Amino acid sequence: MSCVKYWILLLALTIACALPFTAQADSVSIFTADSHHSTQAIIKAGDLPHQAQNTLALIKRGGPFSHPEKDGTVFGNREGRLPHKPRGYYREYTVPTPGVRGRGARRIVAGSCGEFYYTDDHYTTFRRILE
Image 1 (cartoon, rainbow, N blue to C red):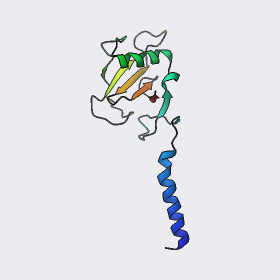
Image 2: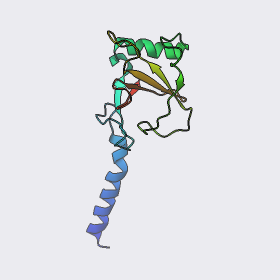
Image 3: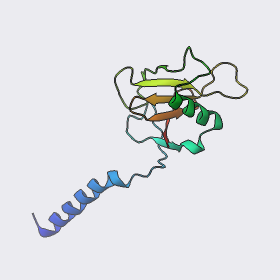
Image 4: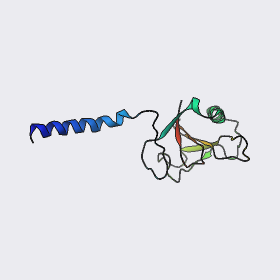
């Protein structure tokens, strides 16, 4: 291998190895069923709607929840929109929507390891919540 080819290969490998570490926390990608990749949109907890901030606090306290028959139940992730985990890993919670009867479309999904995801379109897209 010529010296030039060696240096080009070394440079390419260095760049390829560095790329995963250059991702920013404010990623604009949204994790959906059609995009089976690991990048997700991020939302800071302080940027959530007020009702979602309250729901997040309730989850951490263990309730009480506005829909006790549904809040805290297993979220199956059947569409694969969140990272694949064993059944029972995710739990879903209702985020109240002003002016909407019933549960509305907004939810927080909690993972067993303490991660939280917010959806405002009934599970079509998720944003990971950063605290």
